[in-house]
Image 1: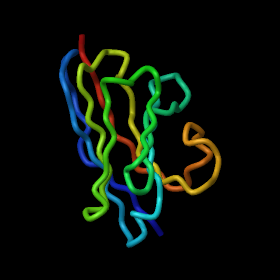
Image 2 (image 1 turned 60 degrees about the horizontal axis):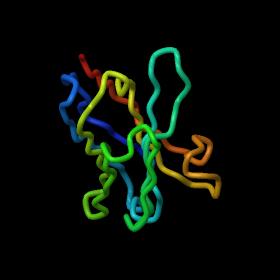
Image 3 (image 1 turned 135 degrees about the horizontal axis):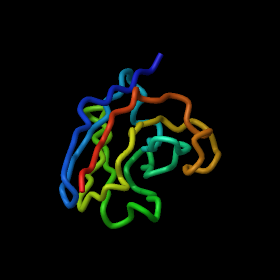
Length: 124
């Protein structure tokens, strides 16, 4: 059983930055692509970013492109989400997830293990 643990989250003012992480249990972390999704209150879960198993390819939603950076450290079984220039509309619960299928990286259905989610609140 794979566990994805997301410590932190937090409250930050608009224009600020955060660098949350997601740590995976097990010895197969480096074999899988990883993704970040978010869900704002009353909205559906939406794709934020994804990274290939070796970090060689990354994907971003248009809404975060240029402001968010996904990265991973396979030696530490950890994926990161650097966020800068945060906006109030970035307020949401953020989830990391492990991708296992050939479906699009943008599709939540491509992921089978999910973190517990952490709240990020950006105040104006």
